[in-house]
Length: 161
Image 1 (cartoon, rainbow, N blue to C red):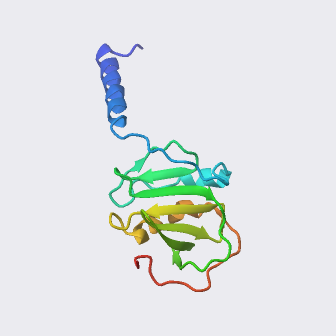
Image 2 (image 1 turned 135 degrees about the horizontal axis):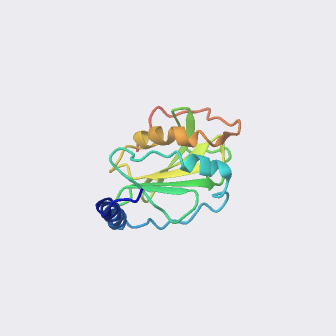
């Protein structure tokens, strides 16, 4: 049975519309993590990332093991960054994942502690709460292996500045 011309035209119009709409949100240019962005566990984590985080949509990136949310971008994620050693940075637990927190120009950066490969997330706290971000990505990040390290001095919150 041959498809009707109206059905073919409708399908073609739908594809064209999708292509036009996809073009509205440019690809976020990012550099992959220098260490292990191609680690299979990074791939396992990346395919499980939530869309959206809060009200910010997941965007396409041009780097392996990386993700971005929002336009303008308010959250950046890099999988395969160097695994942190013992650190004096504040450590916060969120949904079973330990995160080292540091201030950066864009807001705060959180790097997993006790995970290999490590994941680094940069959050603009003026746009979205870091606790919300870390909680929403926790399931995906849990697909990276624990390496036996845990934080011993924990902060109570991820919202402090």
